[in-house]
Image 1 (cartoon, each protein chain N blue to C red):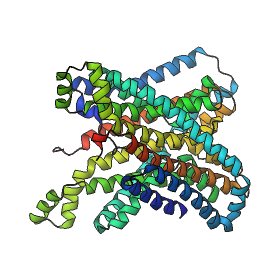
Image 2 (spheres, helix red, strand yellow):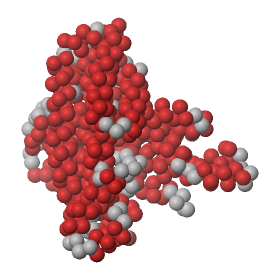
Image 3 (tube, chains in turn red, purple):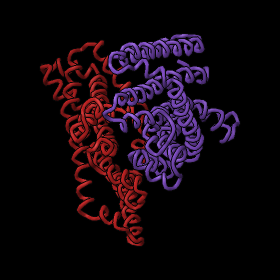
Image 4 (cartoon, rainbow over the protein chains, first blue to last red):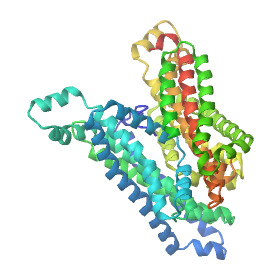
Length: 256
Length: 263
């Protein structure tokens, strides 16, 4: 979860074979999961309600809604929270930093379902509300990681860059941001995976997505619908986390 | 606003806990603050929709949900701690086992909570069952990972001298490594608790216990006068619980950290 509380043991301690196994683990799990679900679906008889849901058109629509919601939320968070973090960092204000970090802790303690439902009550239901709730929910963790990443840059490095005649903006762009990028990216990855999960809840406020299948399956006692919906959402979350992990690894500056 | 005030107060409590010599006195203060804050929250929102009256009428209900929420989290995290630390002890020195265990736990944590709860409900019925199973599964990653990290970070010379004194491997593990790893393991348990408190709120959808019930009742009474009161009291309750639990863990950490390791 939190990239800050404890060191990531896997990355440091296993050899090359372990690394390969870890890279392949997630897609393998998803493939097995998908295969088992498919085989199971083949083996049972679907009734008319289940057939209405378990067809390609319906599934593609739900997946598209789900991805649209979670990916646009993550993109908005990246566009808003990282610049905000940079701005707060540049004010050099300890008070502001303290307030933001305290708020981020509260944000982490707030249940996502509460945020989504509260916003629906005070505003309205639908896709926009879900999007705003998702952005609001993921904003603080990314902001916090941006601040932490920038603050962790060694002052001596910053000093040296200034001494070489770089302007403050150059220091920020060429020294601070690249050095802080692993922490920032880790925050974005967490928020992206979270967005996929929280987008499931969007069904409660009529914003579509794969949560529809889970909720309908539960309400109508049609377990195939429920299980396919849950399996799809889990598969998407695992694959997105996997891709984000690869990007994270690839985007890490050479020297780090 | 109330939340912001709460934040600063909790931060101050955290600061004072790290300084204070008497942790018991501090928990007393936390409780008192809790009460005054609930009163303050009620006062501030009275203009909106009669929040004070709402809270007053439903205080028994709220208290019960608060206790249930705490209970389901406590049970789940306790089970996850036993399982997680045991798993950690088993795999910390085996590269393959370690990698498999941590990757599996990480994959589980990636699964959206509504999906996992929904899949578990045909197996475990509605109510406490799916909530507890899901919370245990989600809590495993931080606990296992921190156990492994903690056990591995004990300095080699310390292990060497323990072995040199004639301790067996098991002796070293239980009497040297585990106590030294404890602060890190405890951090894992703390993270798991925060996680579990939030996810338990969604458990209410499959008839699980806790404050999530009020959040969902707010949704189902959308448009009515009390919708906001329900959802807000449920959500703020969860936040307060999470912050109080976090403060409690700081106290526990102080009380249970071996003397020689205290900063």
